[in-house]
Every structure is written in C-alpha cells, then in structure tokens.
Amino acid sequence: MARKTIIAGNWKMNLLPAEGEELVAELKEQLQIRENLEVVICPQMALVPMALDWIYDSVIQLGAQNCAEKLSGALTGETSAELLKVLGCRYCLVGHSERRSLFNETDDMVGRKSQVLLNMGLTPIVCIGESLAQREAGDHFKTIDTQIAAVFSQLDQTDWTRLVFAYEPVWAIGTGKTATPEQAVEIHRFIRSKIKEFAGDVVANATSILYGGSANAVNAADLLGESEIDGLLVGGASLKAEDFSQIIASF
Ligand code: 13P
Image 1 (cartoon, rainbow, N blue to C red):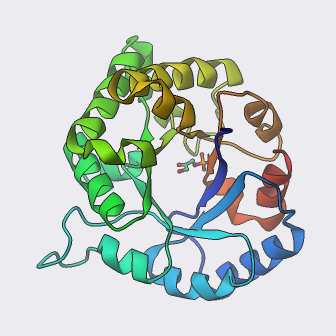
Image 2: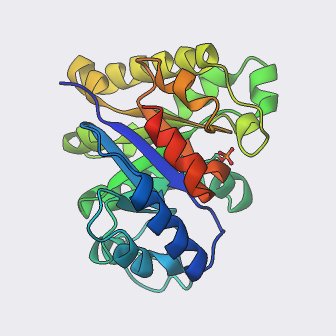
Image 3: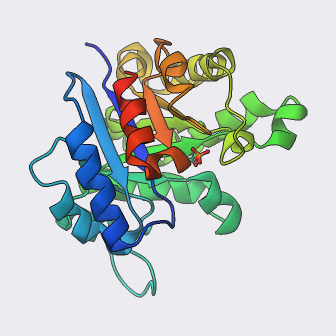
C-alpha cells in the first residue's frame, strides 16, 4: 500500500484570527484535491476551534502543536489530547525541537504524549532531528536513534502502526538552510531502518516520514520527488497561502 503523503503547516505562534481565516480561505480556493494527499494546518491552540470552522467543506485537516502528557488534571496552561479530539484535531505535533529546547521536553515526555494522543485516536507527528553541533560531531544518527527508541519503548505495541515521523534537522529550522534531498533521504532511510528494528518491515514501509526545515515553494518539488520523503512539515512558508499552495501543488 502506498504511504500517505502529508503536507502540514506548522503556524507556530503566528497569525491572529482574521489572518488565519483569510489564509485558509485562500488555500481553499487554490487547493487541488489529490489522491493519497493529506493537507494539515496546525494553528496555535486558541485558534483551533475557529480553524475547525474555517476548514469546513474542504479536505484540510486540523492539527495541534502540542498536548499534555496526562489525560486531565491539575496542569495549568496545558491542553489535553481529549480536548483536541473534541475540537476536531486529527493530528498533533509532538517533540518539536522548539518544545525540546525552549520547554525542556524530554524524549520520555515525547513518548508519553504520543501514547495519550494515540489513546484518543489522534495521530502524533513525532518530530526528531539533530542540532548543528550534533551533526558536526558526527552524532546525528545516534541522536535520532535515541529519539526513536524513546518513543517506541513508551508505546503500546498495537499503536506502532499509527505514528507519523517528521525529520526536522534543527540547523535547518527557520534558517533558510534546507537539508539537501540526499541528506534528508539518508536520514529518512535510517529512520525507516530503526522503525523496522522495532516494528518490522510492514510497519516501517507503511509509516510516513516527513521532512521539515526551511521547506518552501522552490525546494518542495525536489524534496517530494524522493520516494523516501513522504511529505513536508512547513513552518514559515505555511503562513502565506500562495507559498503553501505551491508546496502542495509540488506533490
Ligand atoms: P521553517 O519551515 O520555518 O524552517 O520551520 C520548520 C518547522 O519547524 C516546522 O515544524
């Protein structure tokens, strides 16, 4: 079975309601439906309920950027996976490098958040990737290996089939410095080989692995042209309807 291609826009902490609404309206006009393609937007939390209305009558799916690692309780400021589900989210990013570096999110937390999401029927998009220092030290494979192992070791085995991974080299995020398709493919192959070790061939071959890090309208076609790259997680370029539409059209 062909893997699903997912093009997800991570809006990060950007856009006010009127801007988000306009962006989605423009996207809906330009979007061409393609078989086996999933288009996802991940707005900041307070925009999520509004975004459910904006995407109405379109193929666009809704994702969140983060969730709590527990189901409910005294966790001021957090958002539960259960609420995300009720609000119409199908996806949630987990372990984005900004959460790992700015909010001290550990590999174990990433694993626990993934499990809570899976229990609620949402698909976690698990973000992994090395820093510049780790790449320069030749530690990128080791880093990614540890990140993947932490997730699989926390999850119920029956849920191993329901993950999406996003390889986001930290040195490529927001820097304008994209990984070359060759660099991305090398790591995607490695990620798939690790999934294979845990979950076997069938799961590894069915798991979508996205690339993220300065993906844009110019480089999207080359990246998506690689059979190992099953989609993109787009930051800055997802905030402009024309750019994001062009990225989607590159598939
Ligand atoms: P940029 O596309 O702005 O580099 O951001 C990538 C990213 O962090 C997506 O999650």
